[in-house]
Length: 87
Image (cartoon, rainbow, N blue to C red; front, side, top):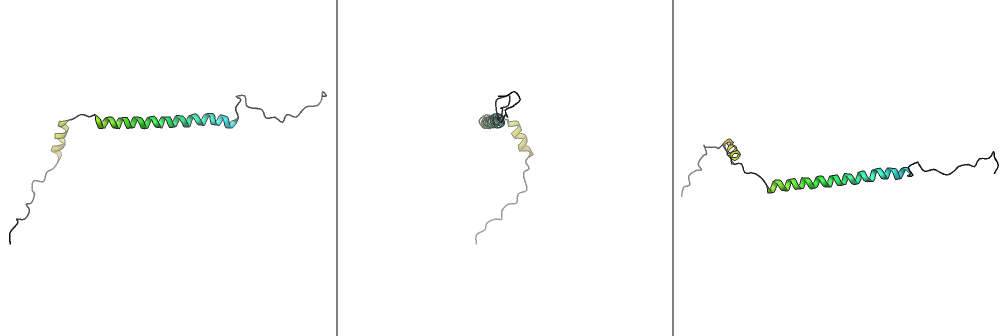
């Protein structure tokens, strides 16, 4: 080689991180998607357990039942059905 000649550089160089653009994008998207799926799964599990606990455990409060019962209106002026007669 002579001193004044340069060799053209046609090779592509990798970024400093050693990963190409699609690899970096996949390295970001895949953990985010998996984390989101895991988070949704945990949330559904917790909601199911809370509903189950509400169905199996509870407190009986007769005072609230009595108060709700006093609020109901009763129709004390009911009409009697017509008297049945024989022919």
